[in-house]
Amino acid sequence: MGSQTENLLTVIDVGSAKTCVIVAEVNDYALRYRGHGISDSRGLRKSVITDLDKAVDSIKKAVEEAENMAQAPVEHAVVGVAGSHVRGVNSHGGITLGSRSREISRDDVRLAVEKARSISMPEDREVLHLLPQEFILDGQGGVRDPAGLMGRKLEVRVHIVTGGATATQNVVSAVNRAGIHVDDTVFEALACADSVLQTDERELGVCLVDIGAGSTDLIVYYEGVVIHTGAIPIGGDHFTNDVGVGFRTPLPDAESIKKMFGCAIVTRIPEGNEIEVPSVGDRPSRLMQQRELGEILEPRARELMELLRDHLRQAGIFDLLGAGFVITGGGSRLVGLLEVAEDILRRQIRQGYPVPIAKLPSELLEPEFGTAIGMVLYGHRSRQARLNLDRGLGAKIKALFARQGV
Image (cartoon, rainbow, N blue to C red; front, top):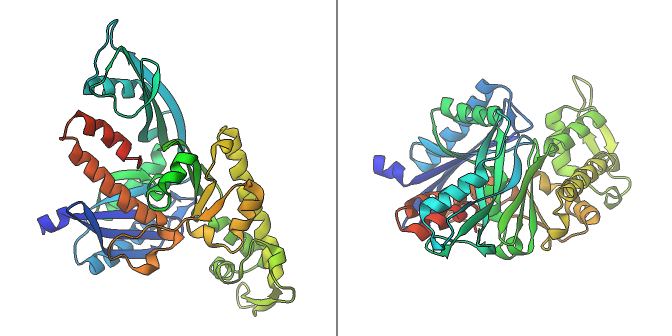
């Protein structure tokens, strides 16, 4: 069993709406799906754990289902981190090698990266990822691998992804209490990019928008590297809550109504269409105009896209998005949402679907599973990067870039 589990890669996506576990098998550098489990998430709000015991129960249920399907125990996992507590910052640092040019060593590269990482952060934040953007050798930028080159001054630009220490640790604690060791944590939008973005999009400039239940996570690539990460505190649950309040119906029914009849563009809904809306308590159901549902959902959809636009403009990167936006996640499936995005953002928009891995069931090839599948690809890439650390100086540096899919 030991050798069997060593070849397995498990990821756990603890979302506000669902907890998803995927088990994959790694053989000869290839990935093959083995099993998955899904459970309704409990004990989370806006991607942050609020009730540890309920969250642990949700994780256990999803893990047990995945174990039964994979016919193997889940003992270790890569775990996703998301939510409005995640923020990114760009940093720059470097070292002087001497008055005369000399060959750059691995230790030189590590020291330059550490200089770039040395930024002041509040005590309640921790570094999730350190993503190199480029090395600058004697003023010449665009260097991806400086090891072995000659120079007198080595600088590096990096993007640092940070998360709230408490929020991150609570996710890890919940997974640990479910009996699983956490091998690594990953910002979910970074992992999702592995499964839904194309290489040319990363080069031209693209913003991946992952609309989850509790929040909308963002990651921006330009010239092949990450230049911005962040989150907007609006997700699919906010749309559902609006429907629940506006229609005075229980939240589970509001979610069903949103999925079955929701549309983010009122004028696309035929006049006269009626839908049955359950009432609270023992009151009888009512018939209501479907257009009223659209009148609830459209303002929230426009607000989300306007916040996204303003967020990117404030960061000074909106005009860099030559390839536009890729919108994914369960919240992206609301009918008409992409048209609203196109109207407000004035850029190319496409919906992001995950790339398949061998034997993956077709029902997982949907936007809401892009993050979990991306975590599998990220975990596999990270595992290969660690193996490459024994294969020379060049591979050691390339491994840093491999962790962001460059």
